[in-house]
Image (tube, rainbow, N blue to C red):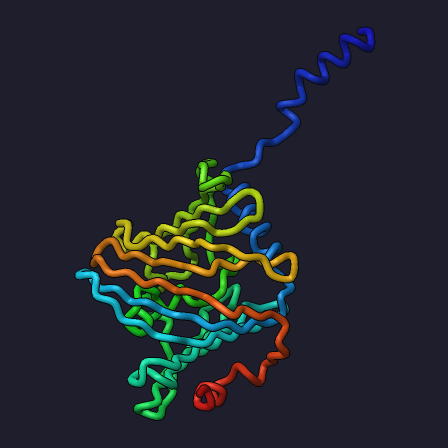
Length: 260
């Protein structure tokens, strides 16, 4: 057999030698890339306005402060502090996220002057009357889900990967999430949440992205719409600052009581 014939024969065998990437492998690879692109920010502080809207369109507004700490080898730590209105002032939520095992959360209620631990069984409950559940407020960690790439789809001026994420935690309030992640920067554009009956429960949309430190993208507006009760919650972020000098001592149960 001459060299040309041998080359043709090898080319014909190439598809058999190259194993195609499965939908599960591609979904996992997308999740890992999104996580990798948002690693290295150290810590963050920000202000937030939370707008609650009921099914009749009536609004109530709360102002908050957010603190977050990146933890090497573990999930992020977060502290959410309510400043207004007066009836929720001083209420604070402390969250420790973990890639494996249950996340840990504690809520400080100033009227009772006590710290309440949020059990893993209750994490699907609403946070402070909003359409965000407690489990929505912990950091995204790759091992928390199983993945399946579904398709590519236009999203604004970009194209998004559409990926199914199935929680590995049996206490999750969701059977699955469908996420839209843009292909240019691996930013979240939309998340659909399906309840334990596998019915569409909520949709979260992200908008007004801005880049910080030449690398980290943050959405300044997040809107969670509950399709089953007609309510919605909008989070408007401002004054986002990175590498502000926060440390572990700013994220413990004592820091909840000091939150003012």
